[in-house]
Image 1 (tube, rainbow, N blue to C red):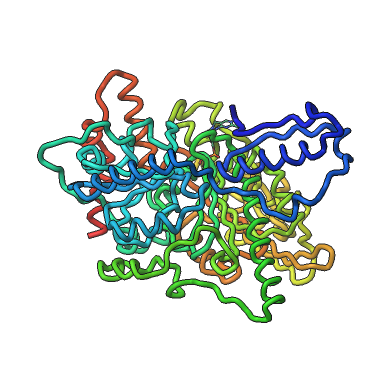
Image 2: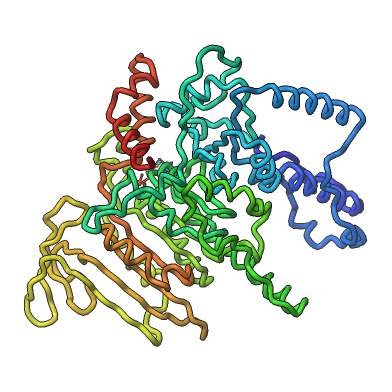
Length: 552
Ligand SMILES: Cc1ncc(C[n+]2csc(CCOP(=O)(O)OP(=O)(O)O)c2C)c(N)n1
């Protein structure tokens, strides 16, 4: 059953209107209490039924029912737990995603600080633990993670997991579920890695280098601010985002169970609308209280600059993460990482974003098709290819007014362009590394006149207007780290205001390391070989050593 409570109001007789409102309250209570969907069937002939409004005066009781039995059971569990906690010699905390659904960020934060145990997260639980804390060691990825991590976790004598979701994706093929019995014997080394310190010690990227999956996801963390809402679409963005190093009170939304591609584009609309409402509430409150609220932004930095041990430790003194994003914690930015294949499923939601003038920063990962699927099955298979869209033209198509005052359009760096006469340029360009794109472009607009030409690099800025209100549209393309860093350095991009689309080109056969490991392990398992140990000898081990070395 998908829903946790149901009622068909059509089965209640028309004159029992009190029963109708009681039933609605009962179902809504379960919805809030269990944080799960419910179902209310409302027949059209009941819509106009007058009901007594007296019940609206008192809020629905959403506290769980407490009985003497439940209290006794709670005490017993607590006593057992406390005894295990005080006797644990190699304990671990795993913070999973239902922590977000139950809004217990602050409670979890307090526990993590008090215990100071090694703490890890899961794909679904990403952002549920304050990643600035010194005892945070990134996501535990089981057979897809670092070779040192799994044996260490398997040797733990106590693993406490909060908000667990046991889907295959969230548990890396069930390989992260704690073993049933503790293991005795010599303990393996405890170097689980410190993502924040590793990010800080990465040397700057070569500006001329192409953008690759192995370090893009970690490096892009420098763009994040406290209180950002970040969404990552199923595909390499979702897998890659497990490498993010998040500031405090950032919220990461991904799918770790159903994985329908295109979902995040629509979800980003909802998230951006929610962020706007939170901020509008702030303005209303200011009006009521006559005082201006200020953002709780900690040290005023994005929290990523911390790297030394003492700096990391000082994070313990910072205020805990908030249970609910509020006008004082939300940055106002909604940031979506979306693959080109996924974007093609629900691109029309961009129209909704534009229509409602939502603030959205959209990183469109253009790797020419279904890359994650290529790795799973059919690296060169045609069914993993998609049509090559001109993604940055989408705002025009979906109704953005780009003709208003203050428009500024530039077409930069048309590759190997030679003049082909009045206002035209011949292009011998390379798109997605496969070369050979040729054609003629209009030099003013970048529009294709003949052949299959693409713009080398397109930068568009427009101050559109709709119903008299300004709504900024920006579009950019990044093929190298130099391109990307200069885009991210622009104040108007950092602000997160309006719609900002950044098309990031990556190789079609490139994937995050953990995806490569997972696939390699699954292939090995399917062919009857053992998991894990084999991996240590393979290419992934070399990459892992490089990361650890870079982090000192
Ligand atoms: C509705 C739906 N159709 C198909 C799939 C299978 N699927 C999972 S990921 C993926 C490809 C995603 O491609 P893209 O968004 O371009 O991301 P990439 O991995 O290439 O970066 C597909 C087709 C799915 N999960 N959901």
